[in-house]
View 1 (cartoon, rainbow, N blue to C red):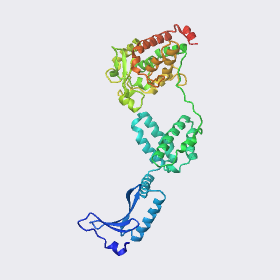
View 2: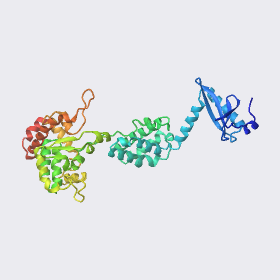
View 3: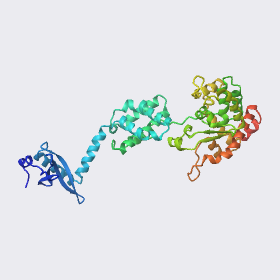
View 4: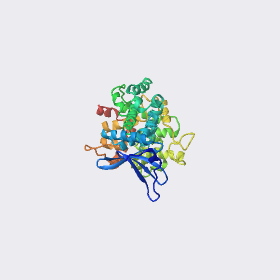
Amino acid sequence: MPLTDAACRTAVCPPDKRHARFTDGGGLYLEAAPNDSRRWFWKYRRDGKESRLALGTYPEISLAAARRARDAARQQKATGTDPVQARKSAKLRATVAESDTVRAVALEWYGKHESRWSSHYAIREKRNLEKDLFPMLGERRLSDVEPVELLAVLRRVEERGALDVAHRLLTTARAVWRYGVATGRVPRDVTADLKGALTPHKGKHFAAIIDPKAFGALLRSIRAYQGGPIVRAALQLAPMLFQRPGELRGMAWAELDLDAAVWTIPAARMKRRIDGKLHGDPHTVPLPRQAVAILRALEPLTRRGALVFPGERDHDRSISDNTLRAALATLGYGPDRQSVHGFRASARTMLAEVLEVDPLVIEAQLAHTVKDANGRAYNRTQFHAKRVPMMQQWADYLEKLAAGADVIALERKVA
C-alpha cells in the first residue's frame, strides 16, 4: 500500500532493530533508523544484482519529491545508464571542475613528474609554465582553451626570437593537455591541431674548432694565458679531458686519485635523469700524465679546500662557466668561435677522423649512452681499459699540435 504523509511523519524504527523500511511502490521506500533519522531510497536491479539509490532525507525531501526523484531515476535506467554510477561520475566531475584551470592542471601534472626529473629540467619546465603559459591562459578552464589561443601564446615566444623555447613550450603544453584528457578535465588534446604551426627551429651547436692547425693555435693561446693559475689550469684541462663544463668546474679533490691517474665523477654530478643521478654508476675519466702534472702543480694552491677550481670570492663554490668563457674571449676565442662545451666536439672529431679511435670508445669517454643494433645500451665501464691509452694518445697529440709538429700531414689525412 502506498505511503501517505502521515505515515512518513510517524515512521519509527523499533529499538531492537537496525532499521525499518516503509515501502511506497515502484522500488521507493523510506528507511527509519533508531536515531529517528529517515532516508529515502529507490531499489532497483542492475545486471541481476540489487542496488539502491539514496534520494535524500525526510522531511527535507517530501513524499512527492521522493516519487519524482524515483521516476527520474527509473527513466535514466531505462536509457541504459546506471543511476548510482551516473551520480558518482557527476560528483567526480564537480570535484574536478574546482581545479580544472590551465594553471591548476599544469601544476598538478608538474607535481606528478618533478621527482623523476633532474633539477635543471624541472626548473626549465616550471619556467616555461610561469613565464609564458600562465600569464595568458593560467586562469582559463583547460576545456575552454581553443587551439588558436594556445598558438597566440607560442607566437609571442617566437616574436622575441626564442624559437627553441617555443617548441619546448609546445611540448610542455602537450603533456599538460594529455594529462587533462587522462584526468577528465578536457575531452581532447588541442595541441595536436598545432602540428606544423611553429617556425621550424634547428638546434644551434656549440662552436668548436675541428681543424688541427687552428686547434694548435688555440692550445698555444691557452698556454700563454696571463690570468690566474686556477683558471689557466682549468683551460688546459678542458680540451685534454673534454668533459662537460659543469663537471670539470665542479671537480673535487676527493674525486681524484692522482697516483692511479683516474678521476671518478659521482653519478649525482653527471647529466642524467634523476634516477640515473641517484642509482647510476659514476663516470671514470683516465688521466694522461699531462693532466696529472697540471693537477699536481695546482695541489699547493687549492688542496686545502674541497674543490680543485674554487671561486676567487667564495672558496666553497667553483669558478663559474662564465669565468672560462671570459678567459677564452680574452684570448680571442669568443662563443661563436670556440665554446668551452665545444671542446667535446673538437675531441670527438679529431679522435675519430685523425687518430682513428673506435667511436664507441670516444662516446664512452664523453659519457654518452650508445646502443647496439638490438637497442641494448653498451656498458660504459667496459671501455675503461681502452680509454686509458686513448686519453694518453690524445694528450700527446695535443702537445704536437701546440708545438706545431706533424699538423700538415695529419690535415691531409683528415681530407
